[in-house]
Image (tube, rainbow, N blue to C red):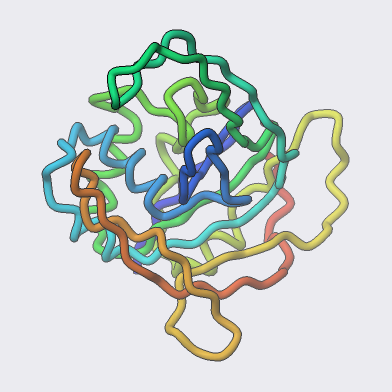
Length: 223
């Protein structure tokens, strides 16, 4: 079985599931819809194109640095009203994760993963971590070792630990969140995209299992 490893690290990232009026939230780890959107941007895939091949991939996340949950307050001036009334000023609250670092793995067809690896190295459109202003702080994939012939679980366990240079590797457990069959102890997440079309966005559920475990390597990647 083949697995593609993607590293998501940067000063700011946001993986929202819902947007309610002036509040834009974020999950505490990357969503499947958000990372598939990143893959689509890299591939140059239009919003109306099928997503079946990407959603079929099994996804897992390893949280090396959870980061700090923070809020950005933005003011928009002269916002038009639907009723044609006088333009107004709106304040929006946007949540993001500061200085977080995640490994994301996709397990599936080796030919597709090779294509995705090439696209992540040579993106058609700009790559960002959930929002257009949140740019990756490190290359998303290793040019040589991102695609491995390992299961999703083993690939995530053997990825280098991501940390800041001033931090000391202490061997503490990290959190894993991996696609799983629905059973006792799993969690339902509504983040599998069926369509990214502007007026026809649609999502469905997946089951994930969360656990804590060690990193099976002493290699370190500074982010």
